[in-house]
Image (tube, rainbow, N blue to C red; front, top):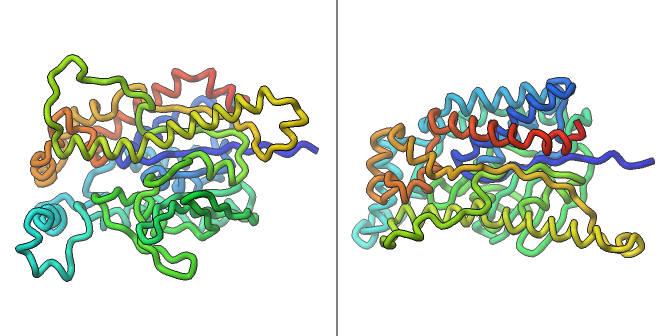
Length: 389
């Protein structure tokens, strides 16, 4: 009897850019419904996420018994998102975190009283805890896994303490954890702390302590040291994967015809963010396509001797530069935050890449949702073929 194939969903990291994923999911839900799928039917047996994508993935996984409801939950959150739901952006919050942190970097040798308890991050993301509790239904996640409506869910984090990239996965069935170079997998009960750790953008949000392997390790954003973003879904049993990116996978040079300016701090930070969130995904997609091509030309007897297997992949990524979109919406950020980001050049067009990760505002999120929907509908035939719809 032929084993039933499993479809995996991979939602990558990118802070506020994750709003794009919701537009993609909304369009997929609509396309499948038009092709005859019941609105509640979940098209993904395996759901994996990283950083803000981990939050979207877990919220969707909690509602695997009703895919349409899961997508609508994400829409309700992102269409009405505000910075204050994710991190403190008032004057007092800026003083306690951002201004204090930047001052310590500049004048730490003078500020001895802070040495015992220095600020942990640029921004205080305490409000995110409340938002996660509103988005998630973790008891329902246990139920959908137990009833076989979902095979597995996985989120990733990076351990500052141990230096490893860690995938935490939850499943009703026993799945053997895997160990690879600089990355490990652990079966665990996914909770709010895992998501806070996975979404803790380095320097921007504080590290989160997680307990595993018999000790406490401080963890940050799962996009760091993520050498193979697609591999968790494959290890969990996916035969085909839909990958939703948080940025264009290839970017032409923008200023080749202009005299170069020395980069602002925000421009450098945005470049670093793109390296963390985008580069490893592009490399992993190339790797998977190369493996698929190699397997396709091997004789059947040789294919039977290799542990590798072909994995169908569909990638949907933004057709427009998200930092360009962000530059049109930075004015919607709260005044204290604009003042702080303006000081490092993030309010300028060339520094908008950094702002694109922090712009948790409805105007920006809704434009990304619309772009995700448009990009997916433009791939209508590919999407329907992928789901055999």
